Amino acid sequence: MRIRSNATSLNTLRHSDDNFKNVKSSIEKLSSGTKINRAADGPASLIASERLRGQIAGLRQAYSNNENAIAMFQTAEGALGEVSNILIRLKQLSVHAANEAVNDDSMLAADQHEVQNLLSTMDRIVKTAEFNGRILLDGSMGANGASVGNNIRFVNAETWTEASPMEGYEVDITQVATQPHIRGSVPLTVQNIGEGVKILLSEGGRNVEVDTRFGKVKENIEEVLSNYKQDPSRFPAEEASKNIRAIVINSINEAIEGSGLALEAFETPDNTFYIRHKDFGASPTFSVTTNISGLLTKVSNVAESSIPGLDVAGKIGDSFSNGKGQFLTAIARSSPAQGITIQYDRSIGLKEVPVKNEQGEVVGTEFVEETQEEIVGSPSNPIIEGYVHISQQTKNVGLGTKPGTDKGFSLKNIRTNNLALGVENDSGFRSLFDIDLTSKQGADNSGRLIEKAIDEISVLRGEIGSFQKNTVESNLNSLRVAEENITRGESTIRDTDMAAEMSKLTGNQILLSASQSMQAQANQLPQKSETPATAVIRRQWRMEASAKGFWEKTVLNPQISMLDPLYLQLAPENHQTRQFPPFPLCNVD
Image: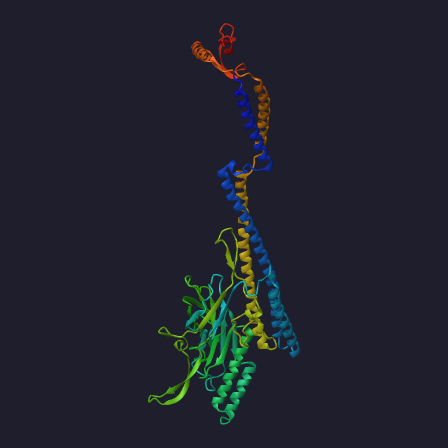
């Protein structure tokens, strides 16, 4: 018998401590809602959970960033919507001012005064359209540029265009843009006018006819011819022919202006007729039919198409560029100048050159067109037309959580002096800021610039709407789905299964109560130990019981606080269970 150690009590105490720890752990998980409260609860799970928590936090911030971007674009779009309303009003005023038969000077002055107020309002909208302290539509969130050199004008740069070096991007024009045209070979004179001139012009599905055989034009020409025939010395043929050509050219231009065709007619220095398209490049086209051979067409009464124009060609920086009309855009992907668009508005003119006879003597002059090489140089001797300087201020919209997931977006400068640039007009208007409605010509040309400005604002609104819907809002939906899925995964790893944990807590509490009760019982048990003799007898009984077919059952021997084997057998005579030996082992001592 031992008195220093109570093995049963220690065993019960250990189980009691384990049960207490289990109860404590369950309470902690239930109260916190998480099953990983410290690294010891699951090191691998903790690592995975913390990574997912970081992703979730980043996704939520990216979600907030996208919502802020949408708010910014909506602010810009709202300002642009008001600008569109102003431009529509300007268009209405230009159409009103073009009605010269009704308007007097005071009415035109009133229209122009309203135009100036509307233009000032547009510039004020640009200054006040801001988001979080950042001006949106003054060009500070886009690419800005300036050009150095005659006939070169910066038009646009894309979001991916790199800022230029200090000296700028070099501009080398290799081909000047020209206009589609038709040029006669025979001057109109008093000798070949016959009964009159009939000219049919067709452009863009619209036709206009000029017939000098009828109406006021006929009367004016007949008056000139009558004076010439009656007094040739006073009204010589050359002067009469000049007056007739002026009457016909004026009639053609009046008819063109009333029809809306983008054509213009004039007389060349060698007295032939010349009709050209107002736009440059290979795309525009028109046709002419005349009743006099050589006047504009080679054959009378047969339609002849215009000679196609040329698109500007050249390089910006080290990038080969694509020309359309007078506009040149750098397209080489490997070039930092990619995306720059300029306008080169130099045109090929006529120059007077001497005419010599076979002996080399000057006998007169003639007018010929300048050559491309005279203007732009040759491959061996190029002429550098100028330079373009780019300041890149395009801003990036943060779409995701990692570097490289942002997207650049540019909001162009919509000040009135930066809208409707490069529109061909006879009034010399360079931008919307210059429009003037105080004359018929000014009203018509202002209308062209206003239409261009409406297109530019509409395109910008479309770009904003497309970027907002297809990039930002689409990405926002993706972020929502990603956050939901990652949160679900993080919850699976970290969150407590409340139902399972409550069940576990209940079982642990029962075990804890039982172990505490058994602790009191264990503390009162006497401590005995098994002697060598008892061990020998126990082995003999096990062997004998096994031989007789008894099975072993372990029971607690309260006298020695140890587990004691009990050997049982089902008696065949009465089907009662009997044990072997017939008395507990503890009685042997």
